[in-house]
Length: 202
Image (cartoon, rainbow, N blue to C red; front, side, top):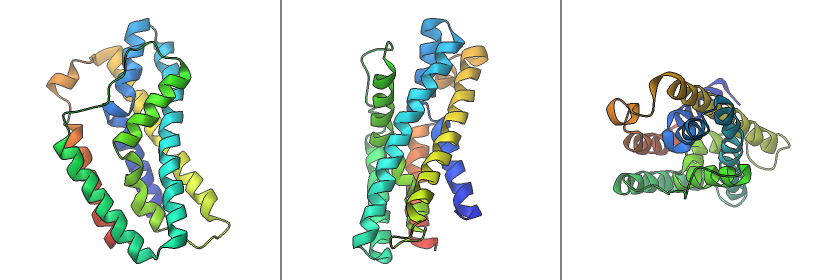
């Protein structure tokens, strides 16, 4: 990974982590329900696993497509998908997948995280980074792809964990009603920026 790629992967991980839909709100809610900071921290592991699985599935799909398509075709197709998903998020920004309750086993929480990340198109944001990496079956392609997913997930769970703890310890979830950024709209803008980066970044 180049320094630009690493910076982009870390920034996207942090952006995902600050989004309540990616898991910190659920972790904080679990902490409030259990009245336990330990329960909050324990929830971050399954959330990270689900997020990484969603990222990994997207990255694997992109890697496989690179075997059959030219880089130019893949860039245009990827940009089109990103723009389409951004428009979809704008139109349906008020609708979110819901879960039945807070008392989830670890695998259920991981599955919830996987569904949420996939439904939000989180993995698509890594498209500009993955499509810019060396292609053609080189021995370093898959290890680099795995590194992208791991670095991204570590950044995501670090930011999500700090946010959840601050909300649990000091702020409270009322901040979502009074002072929180509209993440649905910001998410759509980042998807659009990803489309531009897919076409412009060599």
